[in-house]
Length: 414
Ligand SMILES: *[C@@H]1O[C@H](CO)[C@@H](O)[C@H](O)[C@H]1NC(C)=O
Ligand SMILES: *[C@@H]1O[C@H](CO)[C@@H](O)[C@H](O)[C@H]1NC(C)=O
Ligand SMILES: *[C@@H]1O[C@H](CO)[C@@H](O)[C@H](O)[C@H]1NC(C)=O
Ligand SMILES: *[C@@H]1O[C@H](CO)[C@@H](O)[C@H](O)[C@H]1NC(C)=O
Ligand SMILES: *[C@@H]1O[C@H](CO)[C@@H](O)[C@H](O)[C@H]1NC(C)=O
Ligand SMILES: *[C@@H]1O[C@H](CO)[C@@H](O)[C@H](O)[C@H]1NC(C)=O
Image (cartoon, rainbow, N blue to C red; front, top):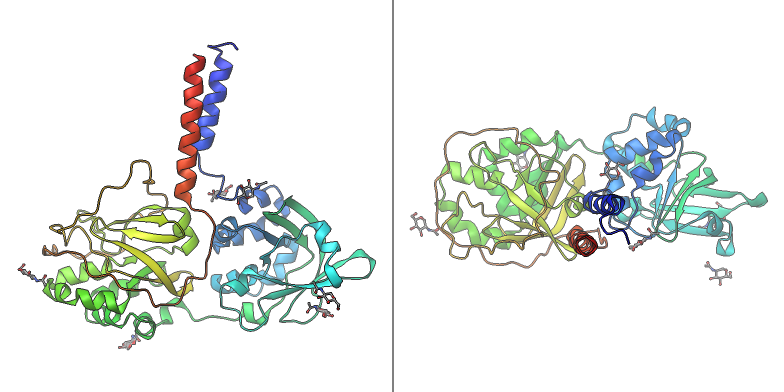
């Protein structure tokens, strides 16, 4: 070995940098990068990104993406669908099983029904979230949405196969589905408080209706809004302390439960870190940390750690989660009896995707109050549909371990 070889040093340095850079995903695949190699699929790829389906695809294993080229996308584009409907349509083209070219041509009994990501969202009713794959005469493979009941498209070619993680294939045209294309209510016309009331968050909804915070929520409905809504048991236990806050303190507390940007469950899982809230206002930070805990996603305020227990609505640009605790900001509850322990070094990610600032301001400083965290409450809400694999924290830990090893060997060599 040439101990002080600059080449060896450079190689080690490059591996270190490569390991620290984001890009490789949990399952090693990145649909955006795969499709970027085929310019004729740029439109399909673009819409996977803006609908955030790309994140969902990257977080899954054993998946097949049926892509359509730019020419095939023009029919769909001429329908001028909302982003939300577009997401449903594209989700119908993501099969929750691995179909490489070989498997497609050798389907048992010549026909199969494949569940899709559209079906997995729970938006699809009955069998409309399934795609019928049929081996046709002459070695062709046909695709049809169960909705349409006929063969709508055929297999063209395989674009990339990473058995059995992801297969990206081209099909001749988009699969029509009245259900996936159905218009959905604009977020601005969704009554978020009645939605919350109907799904176990009546107390929080009523507090919102009685506060100027409601205007802040309403003002962010169109631009992107993620809400972390405490379930009734948690909010009831907190009520005495809530009543004790000043009007402005109440407003800040309520605004602390909203983030002025759309963050799906898989986005939260893959971009742990600091997040600003609707209460963030220059001098007052009012931020919290999102962190994975096994399959769960938790929110750490520094006073409490709340867990996301359900999803009330996920219609980009609006998403409402339920959480098992009231989020207590440090700014209002500093004198808490049981401060949360400091996060483990290295476990904390830098703010990956945190919004720059909220879109509203309210002047009067919130009054301080002293209290501890509210009691736990079991989550009784709609179960989270996403059962994704590993989490980003583990990957980061793994990367640091590998970097440590490389560094160790470089030191030995020198
Ligand atoms: C996938 O690749 C795109 C661009 O190639 C990048 O912007 C994106 O962050 C990557 N996704 C992940 C989860 O690394
Ligand atoms: C497939 O995914 C697993 C993790 O689920 C990963 O360990 C493996 O490297 C991936 N295979 C390829 C070829 O990327
Ligand atoms: C194939 O057809 C046979 C006989 O009709 C049936 O018993 C079997 O379950 C089918 N297999 C699949 C995978 O549908
Ligand atoms: C798929 O569609 C074909 C033709 O419409 C039909 O004969 C077949 O039974 C369907 N397959 C399944 C699994 O429903
Ligand atoms: C939403 O519904 C509540 C009753 O749950 C009502 O008081 C409120 O005015 C409604 N908001 C809008 C914007 O319609
Ligand atoms: C309300 O505030 C007062 C004065 O700050 C404090 O003594 C009291 O413990 C508070 N009550 C609750 C329930 O937090």
